[in-house]
Image 1 (cartoon, rainbow, N blue to C red):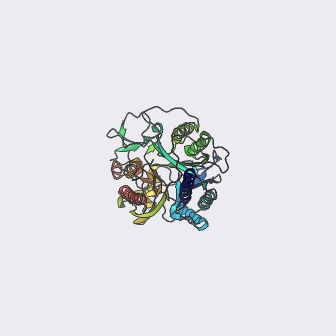
Image 2 (cartoon, rainbow, N blue to C red; image 1 turned 30 degrees about the horizontal axis):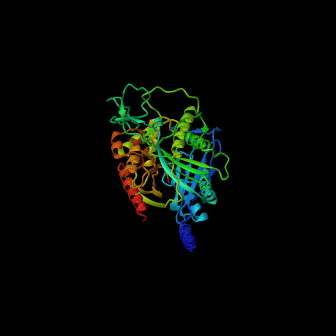
Image 3 (cartoon, rainbow, N blue to C red; image 1 turned 90 degrees about the vertical axis):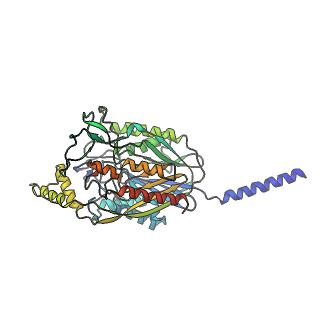
Length: 478
């Protein structure tokens, strides 16, 4: 009789435990990718001049991961583009919400910043440019890829980890010896730093800021252990070393391909999707100017960087503690910031430079290019509203900004965020140039020039405080 009572009690306890487990929402994940490779002939952007695309070295993609905790659903879409205009991201999120019910504010859309893509920005210096055919196609494909990722939603486990890869990130802004910083395109002679000062330059003094070697990543896999997707964030501007006229996703695409190989996730159905997003790399690159250059063929250096970063991520991935559930949250807000405008003296000088040109071709010298840009940004309104976004994924935070963000801003957000770790994603929901700190503005340099940097000099701390408030509310469940 005692044995029967004991068995009955055991059955009762197991039944209660089972009922409790059934009440826990099932965590789900789905991923997909969509091709956004443009037609040949469009202008490849990334340098001061433009040249037509003549060859596709590797396709461009929008890669998307959707997560669902049973209450909240979020999506992360990253495009192999230099940048994505606010009009494209707004339209993509509008379409996705209309067709799937996923709130537009829960959808992240960003660009990796490859310098070997045709523009999806339109005229980046106009406030309300006309949307061209390629931009419309990109918006449509982003929305379709979000939809496909949702179609692939299935039970999943999730985990996160950080890694460090310092071999490929260096601050590209350098203090030089007094009197050796070149004059700016605006005629200024009081700059204190120079971007990309050249390897083994005898006038080098010290970097103007830090670098961030951290890779923040989270991943999802099926309950049986099959990889579904991985989202990584690293502050590397881009690598380059492509042939003229080539279209390429740069190291970001190579990294994603290599992760698929390392995880043994080739030819899955649905496919495994690796996503590398751009961190705060506005003042970083992978060039150590204190050492001579290594001779690489086209795409050679890119392959080395992609393989070594992927190997570092793979080793960290193997240490992930997988969880059955993670609380999700999303916040989307707009912040009002002032646009920068040329001074009357700068504008008069710019118009004078352009008036002296005898050719109707596009401006060619750096002085002419920045004169044309100064005239265009002079037509901007006094202020505008710009998108900031924050996410919670369990213990992980994500903050986004619509700029090429300086490393110091990313490090501050990571240090002060209530979430550990925190990924900071640049080039999300628009492209508005570089975002230096006020201290870096005072030093000068290419990234601080009018038209290179579109927002008021105090924009960075204002955006940081707003994002920290958004992250704190998500951490408190508000």
